[in-house]
Image (cartoon, rainbow, N blue to C red):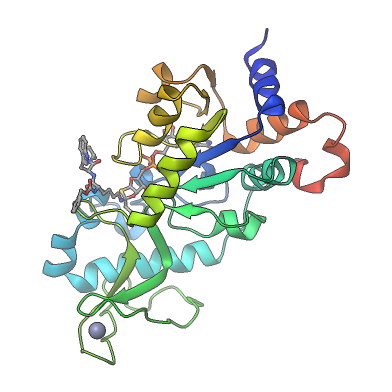
Length: 263
Ligand code: BJW
Ligand code: ZN
């Protein structure tokens, strides 16, 4: 049986589905993946070093400038057929849990109900001192200062406002991690899409599902450490494979659901 047919059968028969996504699902929207993130102005920096509490402490303007640049960039792009196919899976299997490592909001904008954000969000900054959530104006323009932008100060304690994301060495939000582990241990099918599977503890989520007996289906153009965990490996881009998977899993419904159709 062709891999995609086998995957579609597993998905179409599943009662409890988890979709676990990484940066690759947003690549076709024009958001660089984490390991390709530093293009243009940023190409001489290392993402893994910038995404740390130490970097923010040492050079807050550099780190804040990077995140403001990314917040602006995400605001200018749109969800792609991969995000829309995920929302279509949710409409076919309403108990579906979407777990994302991404800090963009493209799942929500594609119609996903309440994705679990394991690594926070570009749109939820908070004070680095007292933790107070801070509302920022929409990122309508690319930061004037180019790469360095002074972060705002908290009105309560004058601490620096920081991005609401999870940096290396920081704990993931407890409720999100618990919800993700719970969903993974109770699903029939886990679809892992566009992640290198290198960053922990998030990379444990497909492994938890596999250990609990779920079928893991991976969508990625390249090999990853998750290849050996997955029952089916679908090599290709999320924007091409996911709509095809949805159409094959629910052939009768595909034409009635614009979310499932490639655009
Ligand atoms: C396509 C595609 C297309 C392209 N279609 N696909 C166990 C072992 C070893 C190390 C550790 C361990 N446990 C913890 C650690 C340390 C560390 C870690 O994992 N390090 C590794 C690098 C080894 N983990 C942590 O520090 C975590 N915290 C922690 O463990 O805390 C402990 C603690 C407990 C209690 C108190 C205090 C502390 C935190 C990890 C936070 C990660 N944060 C980041 C940054 C978020 C903000 C930002 O974006 O700036 O999250 S790192 C970065 O990686 C980002 C991503 O969400 C995450 C995952 O990346 P992702 O999504 O997989 O992207 P890429 O770029 O790696 O891959 C893209 C993939 O897409 C590729 O495979 C492409 O082929 C594919 N692709 N086009 C489909 N069109
Ligand atoms: Zn504060």
